[in-house]
Length: 438
Image (cartoon, rainbow, N blue to C red; front, top):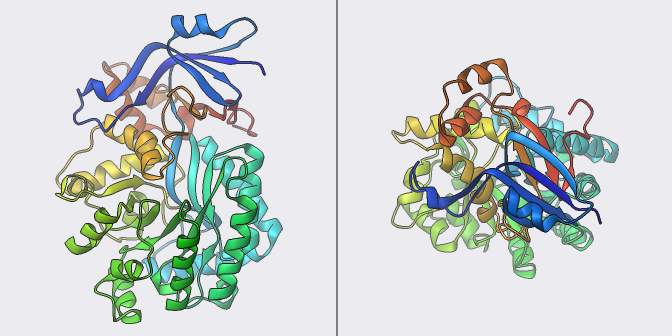
């Protein structure tokens, strides 16, 4: 197979950057090269050295002066909510009942599901995101549509059919048994097919009966290598309703604990209003708290205490995500911009190197896929995003005064969007330039 040699300013992370000048935390090449073969990065480093390894007949693509980073990773998205985004004036539970559940009933139609899955993954690529952890709708066909579209593109994505058997309209309900059976069938068909990974997906405690959460726990025991994703402590009314439904539980987190849903591959969306006991339980189990800043601001849910969660005696594993459609856009750049503001409102700061660690290696580690994606390491999958810090007139003007890599990254995070994403490679193949109007 023909090899491809990319040239540009390469940046990837080795670990969490403790400070803005913690240069040992990342690898940066002013004139870098990435040699790609069979969808993998086979050599990375200074361009002159990588070029020597390329051999004859290699296809060379020069992206200078742009930055080459690992493809962005989004740890919590609802792909059926594309036509819900930008819906006015409701907090979480009203928002679900007014907008989301009626929208998700449409996904009983397989053609609708395939159309939205296609448009959703187009939007991810357009914004530089190459891997997501996605909620489908309750309908088995919605997950089949998502996985089929993802597999056609050779993307590494994690997804699951939502399980919900109460407190929602009939058109978006399953039963404990049908949710279990559909999930088992989807796992058999899709998990490990190409780059596809399955996540067991009970929506949240309000829409799952004890019987369904018991079935979810059984699925986790039967498939310990799978992810589990749900929602936790997003909104005060949600927490109060959950405690009414599960009076025997010590708190919201304990509901999931009792059914065996905590663990190193368990992803809990939002996690804003955690008690110390709950945070300890998540930490002890290695569970992941997923920070969704645009959604938390838009729905008025609260402020995720990112830095405190990281440095507490029992720190939390943290991922970041757009959420969609509770969120306000599809961009991880915009997500980290809003995340910076949430953290600032808590009296802290997140430096731009930490932001870009989070949306690449940090999210890959949180999703337990860092051996495959999230870095530019040799032998990993060639999912790469090319960023242009001069993509708009306002960015070009600001770049005239930028002097450091950290300043450039902060500019990209603060002013950047899909226009700053010049190209995206998925398993070594250009993906953004293939889109209509990409």
